[in-house]
Amino acid sequence: MADPLSPAAGYDAYLFDLDGTLVDTAPDIMAGLNVTLTEYGHGAVDEARTRDWVGRGVGPLIRLALRHHGQPEPPEDVTDAMIERFRDYYARHIADRGGPYPGVREALDRLHGRAALGVVTNKPGRLTGLLLDALDLSRYFGVVVAGDTLPVAKPAPDPAFHACEALGVDAGRALFVGDSATDVACARAAGCDVVCVSYGYRAGARAEDLGADRVVDSLTALI
Image (cartoon, rainbow, N blue to C red; front, side, top):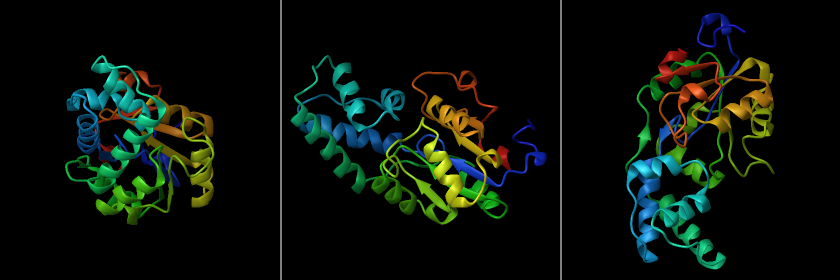
């Protein structure tokens, strides 16, 4: 395999994870989480802990926060209500504090002119669209595969295959760019080369231990 960062790699498409790869969403997720926790009589959590928990879904995020405070998991109807409260607040404040990581816009500007680009995320479709639109990123992508686009999400290979099919490229000619073991597993199962960013949300794992072909500090390394 050619170095994924070398011109010889010549990928036809680049598939990007969203949270933790393109956009630092943790500050806004923390705000929504803390509004939800305090309205239901629980303590707030700090950003460092939120960063460790992001990427597992809203339900696990809330349960981890409650466990952190030594609180038992509430009844299912209460958990469901907390999830809806979080989603409502987050949707209305989705890009108040966070934004694209340094180098993201520059990389997308350059890559957009030479290859097809897509987003493959486990974030729900409605929130994905709101976030991309709020940050003026939607225009770069020929396809967006969200967590509820298909019956299965990452780490299954289906989202990557679906994105490649929509872009009209073979998965073997696509580079997957992510920040987590979930991204690496999806890419490998689909036959894509994979690069991980050194930042992002990895639940405490080292980027170098995720099994990617390369680790980069900025998406500008791709250009």
